[in-house]
Image 1 (cartoon, rainbow, N blue to C red):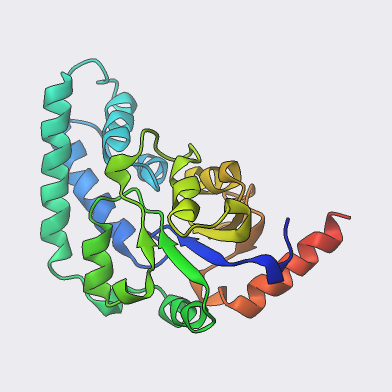
Image 2 (cartoon, rainbow, N blue to C red):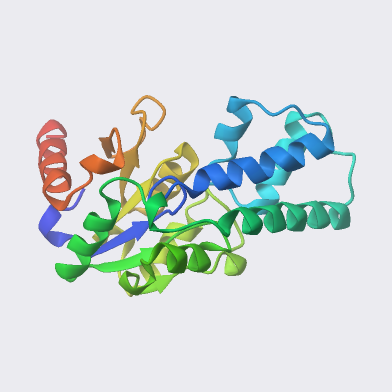
Length: 230
């Protein structure tokens, strides 16, 4: 792991890290699962965190034993339907959905002249950032439509560093999902897992919730990690 002083950029997931939009995704997928006759469970919802749209649909179908019941064209139609449901839910989104401490943290790293990019699997992430009033802090955003592989593949975080003209090793990625942490680690960036440390055990650094995420706390955690790794 590099020293904290060598970090030049931050790479953000969106849902469950910056804002509560993961709940909007879950509700829209729940609606579609009901339509497809797949029983919705908390376990299924957790599997979809940080996963792209088509991959999420395939996970739902597999979960319900229906992975061979639909053509690719039908799957595309259902994925679009889910997105329409999600966009309707987003009509009510505003700054109140920003998770505790995250607006202050994003402003803090911007003021300290760190580069910031978005590494969200959601194609609606630019719209979400606008509604949250945070778009101006992001120097770059990865377009998920240009990616060949979804999380946990490292492609999205590798790209998130590249668009900032940085090496992944010079960046810190923030995630709330196991697939996302694996993606960060695979890219070579430093991974910050936000949530249950047992679920996110592969993260380089763990915080229980977003309110703990500050530059000072990250620096302390990195120093502690380097001591333990000696």
